[in-house]
Figure 1: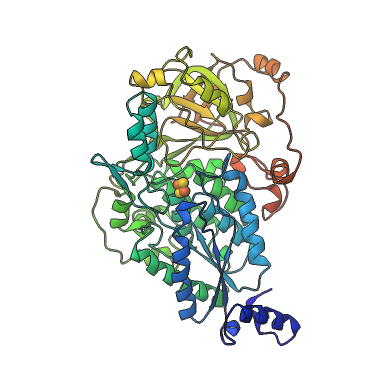
Figure 2: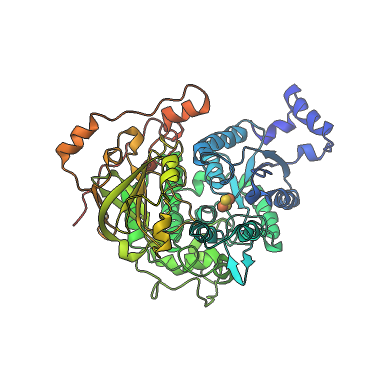
Length: 568
Ligand code: FES
């Protein structure tokens, strides 16, 4: 079906028109082309995306001004704070919702309106698979809060939580803070997952250049919403399907930009899933190479001290692309249809502290490092830009928690046998075990150690971590423990060795002993019905992007990468 069906003179065309006429649309309106669907993830259960309702109105003005016929429709919406146990469990469901709504309705093109972490990846995945012309508009970051003279962004919450658990914040202050941290609507105001994925959409060319970092409630975001509506008409008229923009080279460009800004480790999962939708695989090895030779040039929260507003003031994503151009494929197409090299060729450089040059980076390598070893034969990741460098090379005894409940019950127990050198292991929280890889990888530092001034420890899990969190946190360990990965074999006291620079993560236990432990492993129960059963049977591991095997462009289960040979 396409928007052309509205113009048919037969009964089918009559039916399409008469229902719209019944909704008050004019005879001229229902014959306008192209028909642009506005796929909106606005929801009152998703405050990060609340601004999308008003932005859709601005976008409709743009579609209409360009001669199109805008029709807004809802899909499910995934809010990090409100979907339990985790939004990643439902990302593929949302992607299917988006894909099927696009594919089965009489539209010629679609404008995707997303924001909170999984909503942009789900929309991109669905749109790529549906294969009709598409553009993206992000909700934009919310303003920063303020309390007792301090600027608050979302990651301040982790500091306040640690202070409360240490007895440094009383109930009245805790209550006051709940109204202070988020002073408005919009997505989390640091280089977390939502911002990283909005930047990904912009670098891929699915969103207009310069749009990702505009504040959620600014007039400039409303203006870019209108311009995106106009652009949606252009891409529909030109027949520019998402595979024109989402290509192997643009995916690598997008990851380099995220790595250069110390963006979210979740970007690896979503980019790999998106790559799978065009029949491609980036692979953990390549992610590691790209991060290793992309200097960290963003000094932005949570990895650095500067704000997203500071980064935007220095020129936003186009300025980052300009700085990185020698490492990027400048021929990849930006959201206005021009090659990125042309887009940034006349950009005036703005000095500031949020964005450095390649010659004077914050660090010589990007924020994300890939690990392999006997504890993670198919890989793991660590956000090194957010970790205390003193822990980059560390060996310590494991302290194991089986699941979040056990961790919560024991972590602050004064009798817990733990010291600053321990390696906190959390398992049973991977794609299958979680289910959905909840963002719990940042195991809290035990209260007893917090009180003695400990600020970071090595933590290892098969979970993910919020893009707003910090610490020496090893994530995405694959295979996960619930499918029999080596993480399932770890026992308290086992030595674990982490070496970020050489990319190593090893369980220092004799193979014969591990073989013996394997015999007593059991699998978690299989769900009996519904979406969780579909999810359990088809979700792939983290290195494959946690997509469903049957949704990849090539079909069939992806081959997980072999354990890497790494230099020691
Ligand atoms: Fe929605 Fe952070 S919780 S963007």
